[in-house]
Amino acid sequence: MSEGEAWTTLRLLAWTQEFFGRKGVDAPRLTAELLLAHALRCERMRLYLDFDRPLGEPELAAFRELVRRRAEGEPTAYLTGRRDFYGRPFLVDARVLVPRPETELVLEAARDALPEGGAALDLCTGSGALGVSLALERPGARVVATDLSADALAVAAENARALGAAVDLRQGDLWAPLREGERFDVIVSNPPYVPRGELDTLPREVRREPRLALDGGPDGLSLLRRIVEGAPTRLVPGGTLVLEMHEGHLELLPRLCRDAGFERAEARRDLAGLPRLTVARLPGAA
Image 1 (cartoon, helix red, strand yellow):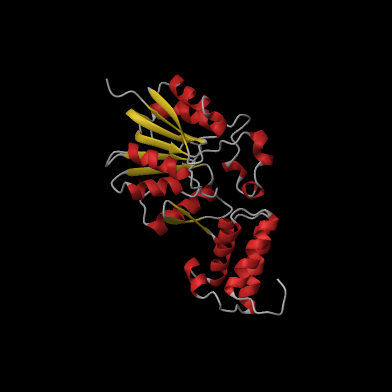
Image 2: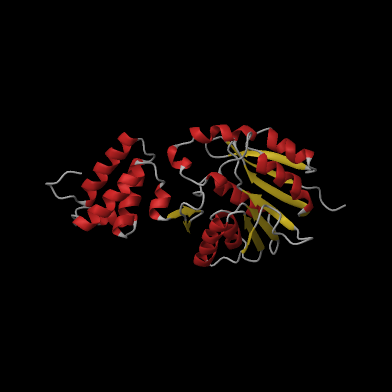
């Protein structure tokens, strides 16, 4: 950013969009808007209402730093501390995976399977995007959310408080934090499912996210296998398991579910046509 002509909001957005485009940043215009709105502590719409306002040096300095960090691969959500999920603002930082729009399909499948007043379990909750959203979408339900990471649970707790969601957060490895005999109508999870050999090929922004939340083992199924094997004893008869998955698990994961005793198991695709989740149901009560 050179000196001379005043840096108005509109000029700054145009320059940053072009700069991000050259640096290979996804959605360069949107990213520029999000970072500038964050630097100016305003909503994105205000940028266009005040498009000809010149920025002061402290504002420019703050924005330059955000642009530099984003160009070096730091995720936008970590820079702004926020990511919207299902129409709600979630606090996010380097302790948790950034919630993706595709995961909203997982939420919808879990919500639709959860009866009024039912019980749901969110495994590997991370930021709490699924568990907190599920509690807000089904206010009468009992929602338990677990994660191995104490840091991630701290973020989930912040989100539950900020959004007014009643979620029972517990730390531990998958089923370990559950009480004996505790069962659920729905179990949902967005676990680590990236095959280990693909981790170094992920976009640089994704590689900045917690490896614990990405690494699914040699075939991406290490955690998913444990979830599928343990879910039947933690679901009520007729209960539903909803799992986000890698696109390479299109046939494998539904088959694992059927082998574990689920009556039906189907893979579903996201809006881009990629396999995104598996929904499996246990047989009902005899």
